[in-house]
Length: 284
Ligand code: ATP
Image 1 (cartoon, rainbow, N blue to C red):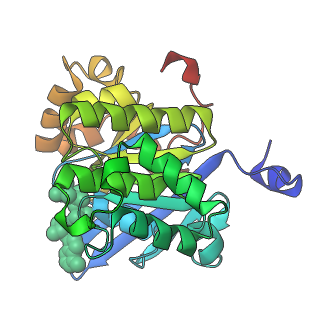
Image 2: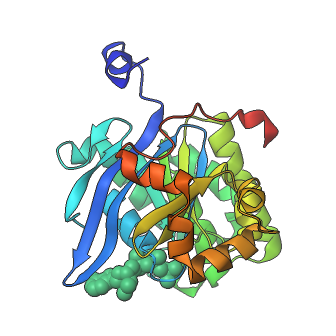
């Protein structure tokens, strides 16, 4: 069924994120170079790539905090450039570099963001998120004095306040201890599987990526060079693990770019992932 027909019937499109031909130029550097991909509902997509590949730049354009040099972003069918408020109301994000105001307590921060998002039944929603992220005993502590792992948990709770259809997580478990990281992964997986949310997740932890992501996109020098199931990709490319494939790919990106499959994806102009039906989520 076409997206237009679906919209005409009042049904939201399956792809919560559609990025088409997105580029960002900084002077002579093309930080993001004609990137196209989609994220479907109930799908967790990993955005992988070496330092400086363009992951954060891509996320910042999807969040509307950075203007693209060219290309379009649609969130739940809404064009970010033309229907900005409607698109952004359906998204949320968490990242270690985007700290919450440190002079507000945990509960105050969640209340302020909840009011900004227009969350209904806000007090009950805050209580449930505080319980879910083990933050009850920290509710009246100022965010500025929390440990980095505690701050990350608050950021994840904040990211879920408005029950987003698109969740952008930039290295969400980077400062979490193994137990807290496992709990955060489980929470996001549950959110994706049980709700109607799609997730774009960046991480340098390949163990985590294999555990969490249904599909990964490898970005290098601003271009998507490879896409697939993180559990199948290593075998398909003669590597023993995703980590080994990542390291090889980060050092020799041009070799991977020349593979017939990736060339087809790059040249088709169609968002990556748009041609295959979503995997069954039961296997997660
Ligand atoms: P990391 O894994 O290290 O977080 P990344 O994939 O998120 O890296 P980006 O932060 O998107 O990478 O940066 C992509 C490229 O764009 C880098 O070469 C970076 O130096 C450059 N860059 C980012 N922001 C700017 C800016 N404001 N001005 C100039 N260059 C920039």
